[in-house]
Length: 59
Image 1: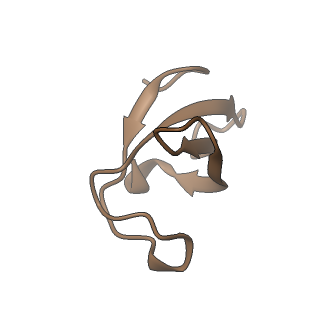
Image 2: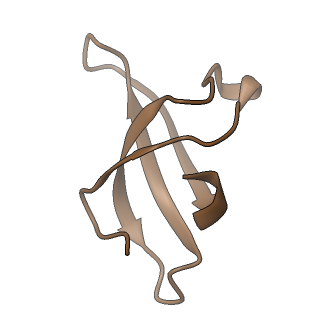
């Protein structure tokens, strides 16, 4: 389903990181159980906004 470097979209707001629903990020690591993923979110300038561990339901 999801793989490293796939672009994903948030299904919910994450206000503590300033990320609204619909924000796009890239998967940088898939855990072996495929239930959690490390996702990096970048600003338009290329600056990293957040690197979060998210569950499949979040993306």
